[in-house]
Length: 204
Image 1 (cartoon, one colour):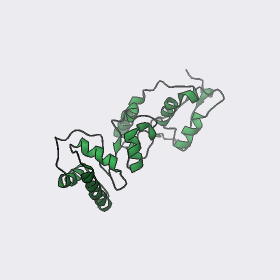
Image 2 (tube, rainbow, N blue to C red):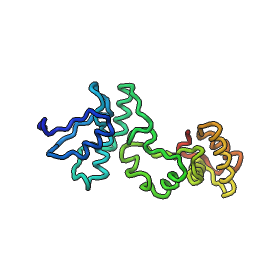
Image 3 (cartoon, rainbow, N blue to C red):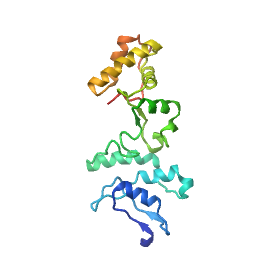
Image 4 (cartoon, helix red, strand yellow):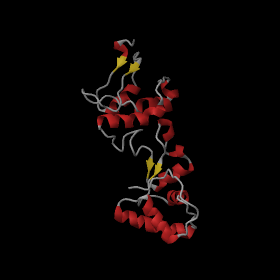
């Protein structure tokens, strides 16, 4: 049983609590988080960022947990089903945007080397896949990859035309779906092969 004087319980603004607990000293042997700041007394330190930080910076902190990081995303979704409290899209680790990239420079970096903008892979925390969100800020490399996964092999000229039409469409509609990309591509280039499952998410 853990000694109560050595347990660290935070009921703060969650982000501050997470940062403070990671830098705790003076013989603290346990931090008691909760599963996404749901507690009647207020905001406890959320469980997801804490083991995540310890895992990716284990050399700095010199401590570890026995939590299975691959269950973080699944656990968060289960908590949503039970409580009805949805996760904010910008929530660290388990939010919908945690591994989503729309800016062209970010997408290009992710395509070339995921470690450029992701300190840990989405699969490591149970997220099925990262998403390259197509919109008016997207880059041509992300579009080219999306088209390839949808069964298209555009030439440079065709890619340029599809990109131009897509950015115009995105600026007007504020949302780009897979069927929108395919409709534009069908008008510009001849499709080769059948569609395959893609981890790229054309969306707003």
